Length: 169
Image (cartoon, rainbow, N blue to C red; front, side, top):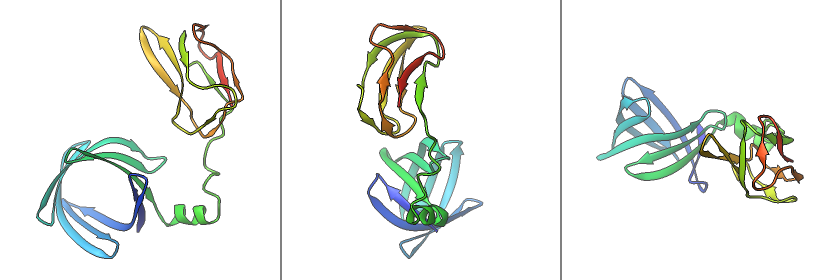
């Protein structure tokens, strides 16, 4: 049984099983059965209770147990928690698995086009930190974890080498 969070708000209890095209689920105590057809690696078709659903997997993060799906042209963010995730959360130990990152270094030589944060800013995992141009492409460097910006080591227009310090947390 999983605790499923949809679009960051709706939480449901869900258990499901997929076996040879047969989809069985229990959502908040209600049993559902349907047919699931895998079209390709990231696309499925589900027939469920007189409904037809095309499901595209847009993004999959196994580490965080999250998915970004497009279901019949509607985007849905799904986050799964099993009984062990719930136990760790209830004990206050769910933050232990997050990697502590002290700095961001340049992944390649390039030019800093813009710095999107300043010293002392609080950032969340995935927030844009700065834009680095390399090989005529703009690369947005994002925060690898939650934290506070301690020091910005570069400024707009700075040429950087690979592994050069850009930001300290």
